[in-house]
Amino acid sequence: MVRTSGNMKETKLMRRAAGGLTIALAGVLTMTAGPVLPRTSGGAEARAAQDTQKGKNKKPTATGVLVEDRGTLQIQVDGQPAGSEEFEIHESGGEWTARGTAEVPGENGGTARVTGKMTLAADGAPLRYEWTATAPKKAAAVIEFQGTSAKMELKLEGAAPYMQEFQFNAPPVVILDNNMYHQYAILARLYDWEHKEAKTYAVLIPQDLTPGTVTAEYGGQQVVEGQRLDMLRVHTTDLEIDVFCDPAQQERLVRLEVPSAKAIILRQGGKK
Image 1 (cartoon, rainbow, N blue to C red):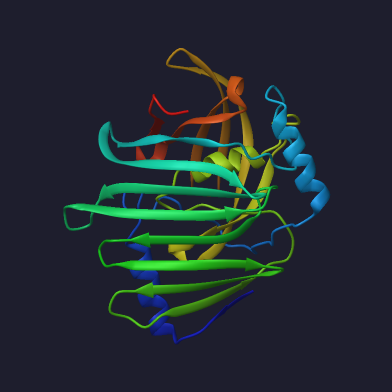
Image 2 (tube, rainbow, N blue to C red):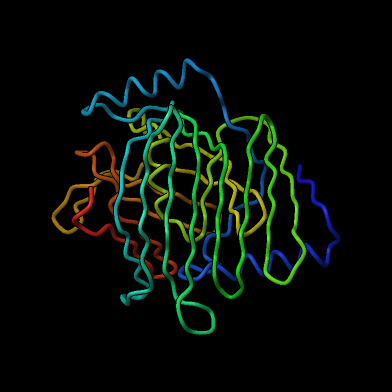
């Protein structure tokens, strides 16, 4: 169930404004509508995740094992540069922070700057998400997760603040911002690589102001540019994203491919 404040005209205005911020793969990540589910807060699972993290040679398990990471992602569309993203995932005080800054082409020329900051529990459950964008208008949003609900406040230049509340039923839930591709690294950590079974996740796409679902399936190992990688196929009824991870580095995100958009997102060297 979704509860909103404001009339239908305001809802459509905010949806267009927020959706207009998705530049590089604009309109590509359209999820199948469905219920969003809440985070978990079980201390036993969190401790198990932290213990597993200490074993560098162990595979991630279904409980979700976050690891520290940082790097640069280059966005290519139809073989041409289409932006870049700097990201960092780190732990502090038992919670995790994943932040990214993307530079992408603006709708009317120039460059748009998009930032995202996610706070997560040790098991990968989202606690808070903040994003900002500079084009086509300045915009910012904060989403707070608590218990079985998430509350969002969206502020758009020239418009009154917009509030929306989502009610969830059961875990897990993931956030996939249209411009923050490092968030697929978090999804890859949540996937159970040991059993390799298909898994459906509730997902919240902040710019779309709507929940949905995605399914992750193991696609086997492939040799890409001389490197043997595990492939995780993330898909809906009308979209497929191939996520390539390095099994030698705890399934570290290396690249993403969106065949329908002729888009490739590549990790650049030099930062690990």
